[in-house]
Image (tube, rainbow, N blue to C red):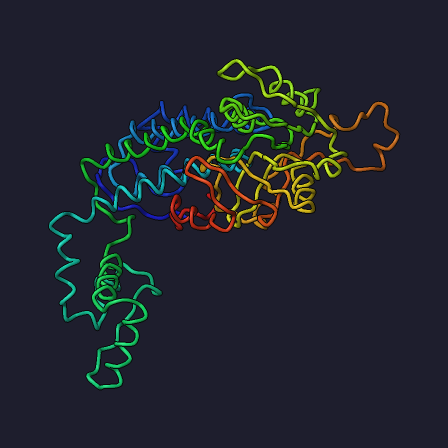
Length: 448
């Protein structure tokens, strides 16, 4: 559904939240940005940027998405926050329709940018002279009724009327009891004042434009870019807190994040054993074989290598799990309930670890945190690859009677994950909901 955007200039091309309108606006006013968007969508559609075919990794794809957003926001002549939100949301919708739903990191970073835009717009709404409202309104006599402005800008569930206080002794006693259990009366009134003031603010969609808004948004996007560029270093700095000498570490398949994490632990002069499960066969060879080769051959900073690296077939995972101290898994996406979407076969590892009470630690960047629940992404968070890599059609006699499925990812339940090690700290799955509310705005949780 198209949402009308307040007009800013009668000479401007009509721009609303519909995809067609934004496309036409970009084509006429900003052909360079329109061509950049079209090229990005084309590469997504033909599969060049999916995790199964991209050699540079998901982080590089996320950085590219941020750079395109940065170019579009910085180079286009939008006139209001409403137009900017429409531009970014249409970019997310177009990328999602082109195949970006298979890479949740694309939608996640777009939601991060949307949250940054909302924060920058609202941060300039409360001017210094207006901030005195929070102090003067404490003594306002209009607290017992909702103002017309509050009713105009607020959702129905946010508009509430505070009953007038009576002077009876029972009411006074109840108020004293409540203040003792929840805090002082002043604290309660201050919190209520802040809530009322937020209620009186018009929605971001109707906020006026500011001359410094573009610069502040570009600075916020640059902070996101810097965070992504330093992501691996920030995660690797925590290696010494999670890996100790003498431990046996099991990992599954090939992952650059796990590889760098283990190399950093070896740089700290920690001696440990790594068991690599061979995992799925990609591009003619097992990913676990490549991972073990990199661990055994690539030297660390002090010239040493990760010693005692061995490869086991997936059928031996349960038998070897009793000797393992910790399991390290990479992430394709971290879901809203704390569940993990990882490489196909990861659920087998997690189930074996749970049976033997072995902690499973997931290494992930915060940009992989997605506000999607597992029941919402059963068909969109996975890819079915060509089964030719696991079944030879030429020599098989069963290809006409048996359906072969080759999924790219597995879903691991949150109760099978012990800890998420991210670039902003380590968290248990039960804390993921708090990170969602911190990094994304609730209005942007819905799919594009």
